[in-house]
Length: 177
Image 1 (cartoon, rainbow, N blue to C red):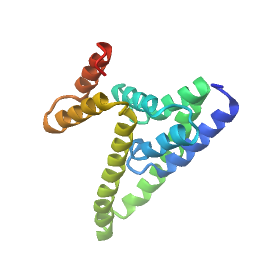
Image 2 (cartoon, helix red, strand yellow):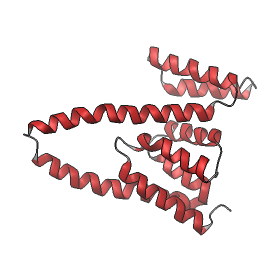
Image 3 (cartoon, rainbow, N blue to C red):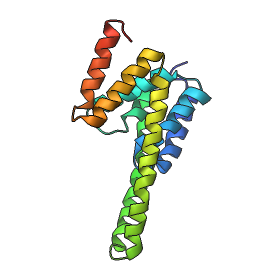
């Protein structure tokens, strides 16, 4: 049942752990969030998760809104609050501590090597997020075509991704997707 204390605790523990692992932001751990809420606990379908992610990305504000929306969907208002605090809290403390130490090593040559090495890791994690979300949204061949065309347009043009979202919503309204 939504808002059940055990769900609130489970959501909180999940986001506490993911907060520590979120190198590159919450988008880097989106596959793990999806795995946990869709495949492990069956709190929502892959399509519902993809829809929440789309709403979180379309909403002004930080990318971590997916945590808030998942918490709300799973455990109501308290779930949203707990998920948000647990996603932001630990990573904020870690970033503060590491940035203070990192500043002390600004003249070291190995610092540039570490920074350069982190870029492909973050890109790979975000790419995995895109794959998981596309897989969850692929309800049938029409959804796959809409996703592929949208991805190609975003990649090859300077169109705002919100236009793709609006187009897909329009196609859903008329019953195409």
